[in-house]
Amino acid sequence: MFGYVVPDKMNMFMKDFYSYRGFYCGLCKSIGRRCGQLMRIGTTYDMTFLNVLAHAVLDVEMQMKMGTCVLNRVQRKLIGTDDEITLKVVDISTILAHYKCVDDYRDEKSASKRFADASVIRRHYKKAKKLYPELDAFISQKYAELAALEGEKCASPDRAAHPFAEIMVKIGETVFGEKNDETLEKMMYNVGKWVYICDAIDDVDDDFKKKGYNVFLQNYEYKDKAAFLQEKKQTLEYVLMSAYNAVLESFDKIQVKKYEGILTNVIWYGMLNNTNELLRRCEKCKKIRI
Image: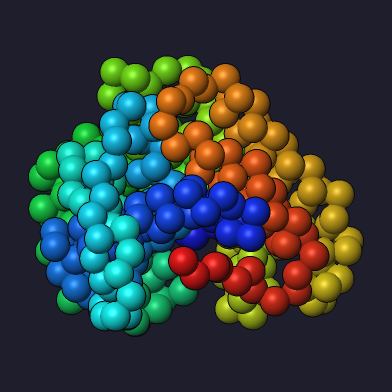
């Protein structure tokens, strides 16, 4: 995924911050143990959010222990331990990382992405694929649909975002199991739609310079990002806020006993902050560091 589903650290209760950081660091360490240290670079806030949401929906407490990070061997902090849910999220993250590299190489002919996939990601992807063949086949199909939409120069944000949104629904089905329901499906769909649109807005300048596909560049004479954000303001705000409000509507219907504070902070504040940032910033949206 892309790293847009982030918490609002400045408005987070300390207990929720330490718990969220434990999820993030625990996921990072789990990736290292399961896939090797290089794969830890791919730890994302989106996958951390999925891990928190899964533990909340399934009503499972994440076991934490004190430990240190490779980036700071002195400071000890709470770090989540491996459990069945986290390892499932690690495998899903690996599958997504593979297809993201394949998609980026197709779009940009990026030799670095192809090398990263071939030398680091692919062998771990093959293991994850064996564990979740149905999910892998579904993601492969949806990326093919996305490629077809890009090939026809699709100008509809809803159509362009649909394949990735459906991927998120399938991921939810895989992670939530019997607890999955229509409300969670709607929430995951709109999270996926929101993330896709965020990425398209964030990358519009790069896509224009590289002559790559971007749904917002179709039938539009691009000058620079400042003009783009001004001229397309109503459209961008509508598609982003429609998806975001749909996420809020679904989240308000979900009953969780654990980690409600983290989820509320991420959805009500973190996602909204990123929405507003993307609508006003000409430079790339900066991701926070935990």
